[in-house]
Length: 399
Image 1 (tube, rainbow, N blue to C red):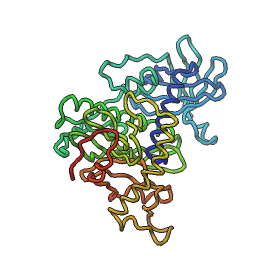
Image 2 (cartoon, rainbow, N blue to C red):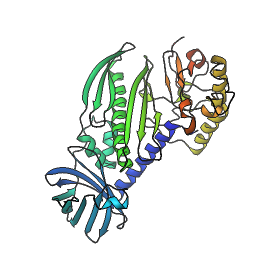
Image 3 (cartoon, rainbow, N blue to C red):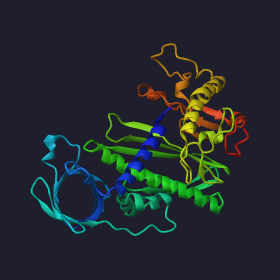
Image 4 (cartoon, rainbow, N blue to C red):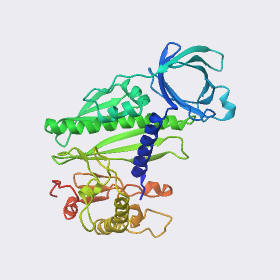
């Protein structure tokens, strides 16, 4: 069952593979230099000389400007604002560049005839420090363009918050307006460091996603907004829900949840099968495989998990929720009116998180019924969860 969260994860994975492929390609170049007096970072892919693509950002602003054009011999012509209608192309600025021994040089010109000199050379950057976040360290060899963007950004300190006996310090990235907290009190120092590394890494990944989204929106008005809400903290788990509303150039805007559920003792992200298992045999450890050091699932494991979700988990959840919330689970008399939470297809290994009372599991409906998504009552009490433990031994609340 591919819900919103799974599509986001799949999209992020495909993007990562795409970027790594580009980095390894000799036709991809990452350059830095100046446009007029303004420092810029520019990326181009000249694999198809008739359809050169790229992007660049001013180091002062960090936002991407799309590029497309052609390469004839050593002459490169690029136009800003890729994806715009043909009748708007003439009004867009252009780069006319000639290849040099270590890059490109030439001129940028806008529709009013204003010209600025452009000087570009192969990009260089200081290697990440030993204590750099793994995500940033990974970008350095795999996506130097994004590494240079994030290196130029700084977080802004926000308010402190007390939550369930733990102290949180909020931080935000001003350009994207995305935020995340660090835990600064309540856990032992070693645990806090592991948790904060994961939390800050998530923030920087979301900042990258924000810029990728706006680039994808092209001439449309892109949007990428998030709400981060702590849900449940204990000596065993940290759970936070991240809700995203985005419009990245597709047919429709969309939204979705992508919670973080972390095993405090190991610092490893938790999959639902780590916490809850209603199948036969031993549950698969960390089945989402989104933690450091995780290996990919085999084809047999993926098939087994899909069958488990469809044939075991979803029907079992419907059965439990019918017993717990009979009025909410009653089928609507008119199939075109109301929300049919007794439909097994809307349940499964969707987004989920810990709450003080139990596990919240999100129902996921087709687009035409998205208003039915995620009813707040869909909480599976810990008394039920403890009877069906998953792959990780966790100390859950007793009520």
